[in-house]
Image (tube, rainbow, N blue to C red; front, side, top):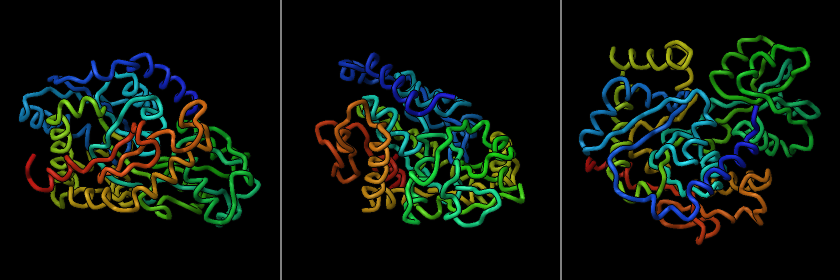
Amino acid sequence: MKTISKILATAAATALITWGGLSGAMAEPKKDFKVAWSIYVGWMPWGYAKDHGIVQKWADKYGIKIEVTQFNDYVESMNQYTAGAFDAVTLTNMDGLSIPAAGGVDTTAVIVGDFSNGNDAIILKGKDKLEDIKGQNVNLVEFSVSHYLLARGLESIGSSERDVKVVNTSDADMVAAYKTADVTAVVTWNPLVASILEDPTAKSVFDSSKIPGEIMDLMVANSDVLKDNPDFGKALVGIWYDTMTVMTADSAEGKAAREEMGKASGTDLKGFEAQMAATKLFDKPADAVAFTASPDLPKTMNLVRNFLFEKGLLGSGAPSADVIGIEMPDGSVLGDKGNIKFRFTNTFMDAAEKGTL
């Protein structure tokens, strides 16, 4: 399996070829847009919206075309976006900073859809305290949000990565790896967490509910494309909240939607609803706007950028975590104001809240 560091290098190189010196030329009004998404509880609405005419409805409203493509490989979807093949993609806040932004692609979070509130977990075999992880090999996808969760968990007990040994393991192999005798600690995400916890030896000792708001699931778009095509951003937000209305409804239609999304993600209605319960889903635009405008967001992104810097994921030779500017909805900037490559905006979500889409 490729590690995120290798992926970053590939994506950055591709981005430099594709975007270097051309961002102004690429930014122009257009009618056709491409959106990439991958399997995760917080992103399943995009597949449902495509299949049920919600994407078509909002594209038609603005006289544009939106092609929504599912990727089975999350990392590949980000690579393709970074290379310029897609205008928007679903990703986490950490990956948005480490891959497209670090690869030179100015990227804007159009929708803050949710944050993990238990979907990511540290699991030990036959032990029930996080302190028991010391001295163990820990299997996880290196440099992913799992790696970040481990770092935050260790920090919570006054420990650090020096006290464990990280073993890079593909998410596709994680459940099988746990079943082997020599694997005693894993960090992963749902639905893998749920599968592993079916084993009576497995104990969740730290999860993302302990660091609320830090692992965010976003829909981001190329900032230049968005600037010249604001209707694209409006359509994305319209699609999202229309689908949220169906997905969260306490009705036969809502249940059917959740069941369909669950099946599409490899589980059933019960399993999907359990994952939803471990997710703080922003199904109302007002909640997403309030979260994004909170003073907690800069604090979270500061933690994330420092983690990435320590792992060498903010670009080759980056002198500090300040190398990439991160703009907040109020215009304040973390890092280099002359090199803003990652942005949070409330513009489109606020329009949804005010009914002005």
